[in-house]
Length: 92
Image (cartoon, rainbow, N blue to C red; front, side, top):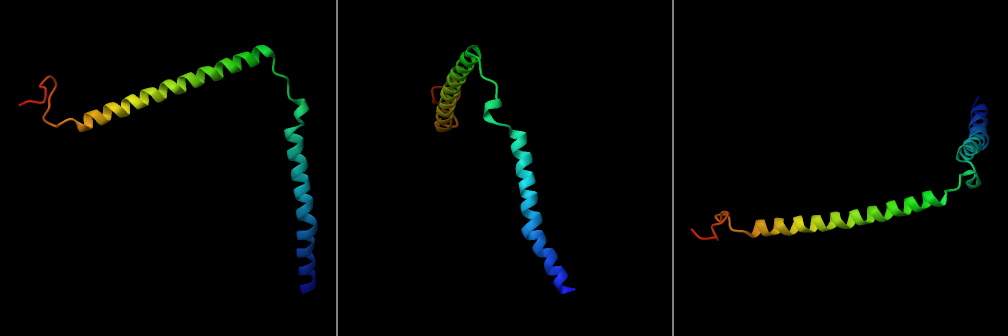
């Protein structure tokens, strides 16, 4: 009885696991395909992608500038005295 249990465990560990890993690897490789099967990008599409990349970079720089201005204005408003109203010049 005990010997049958040991044989089953050994067969699972040394036979079933590698076979299942090999099958999973085969399925995975088949799903991915080879890099040669990917379509080529046309020069027009490549130009449009480069233009889009430059545009995104420009927008990122502008967003950073706006956020710096917001931080600066928030700092100025935080340092302003509480009793200073608009147009009061800070005087009572």
